[in-house]
Length: 593
Image 1 (tube, rainbow, N blue to C red):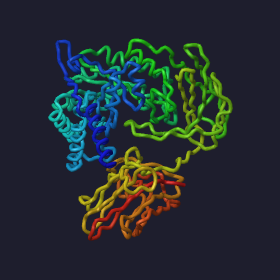
Image 2 (tube, rainbow, N blue to C red):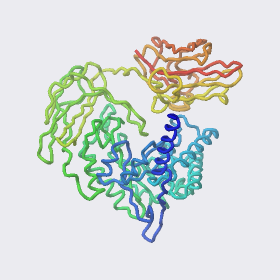
Image 3 (tube, rainbow, N blue to C red):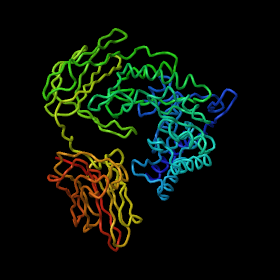
Image 4 (cartoon, rainbow, N blue to C red):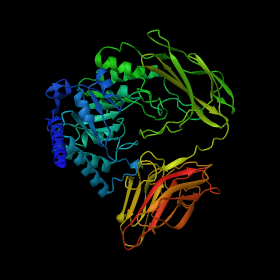
């Protein structure tokens, strides 16, 4: 009886859930072209997208006057339901592979699998009333000229499939700005794509004229905009970009929205501000409209005013740039003085915080996840609202000093400045080759070798995990022979490209491995590219014929006598086939001292 009651309860709860989401009618969205240009209609009414992208609070977004949120890919979970409950819409992103992550658009099997994954996503969400648009890919064309016809054919094929399954929601593909071949391929050679999504930061204000002058024929959405990117800012002598203060960023949001959207009626369908939430990218304050502790910055104030017509009742503090007394390049252990100014528009008191952190040194575009860097304890000798006194570390290398000013209402202002301790810096270790995912790692497992037709490689396996929440599952189903994978930088680098990392100071590469049954034989090492290549690995070392057990075991590659100045092949592993399939698991691959 108890089992029947539980089953009935589950059935009823499932029906209720279906009634609130899956069984609700989709709200039709369409593009309409009039004498004055393009406009988006939702439920027959004009709809200007006042959106943001990120994982911040939807309640705060709705309260600020926003009406939409954007995702980049993956399962959206309860986002559609949560957004619908607040009257928000969602542009659902369908992630398409990037070649820099190892995706090969010349591999028909990969392309077909990607198409089928997109199909499943469309069938799952197409009838949800919160769905606004389909975002098919985000910068999948890459960061060069973006004119690879093989990639664009695959993108258009996904868009065509989406339109066939769901005629109620337009398709949009997002590109990294609009230069190179992007306008030609998206507007003139991709008939299944309805809308051009443009990610632009420093260039956001000129997107409308750039598209017009380039011969664009379709409307656009500014799918990411915000502060000047690190690739667009002036740099120090040692290559660290200067970051705008939170005040300067807020002004840039305003100018970008005004010139890129408000002054472009007929072509601009709206925008998604970046980033509604917090994210470590270049620095921990660069792109987030909120701080990690949830504090709101002036960018939220500006977008609230632009979306709703009224600024918030309590504004974020203002802040001046940080000014160093003397040279920003100092000796190890030197004392440094810095000056600034901060104020509360409501004339309240401010709490301030100063933090010195190592410089990330990673300013690449693409949005890959980066971990927050730790504060250096004891560095701040004295911190005030108008300045600070600090002692620099003994360890040579680049650093960045951060200033935070908080008001009583939970708003904050930020500013920072790069600093350099003179001397030859050492690589900060450990350096991961694999931790929980192939994404966002320095090297890419793009170098497949041997009988690769019988190889599968899963970087998000949860069946057998040594640490974290995922491991690598490597399975070879071919009879005998062998198969291998090389982790390369950049992707698919067999010595014909520059790249690699200086790992000077690393004493060994360690990883954990186990076999499915025990007895599986592997070989592994660091470096594969020999001197006959245009761009070889600076060092090569290999460990052969290791037999795995069924239990997780630690393995290592000694590096003490190896030249580590340019390691393009960060790790490789091969396994020997036998009469039955061979499965091995790998985890926590990293360089240590």
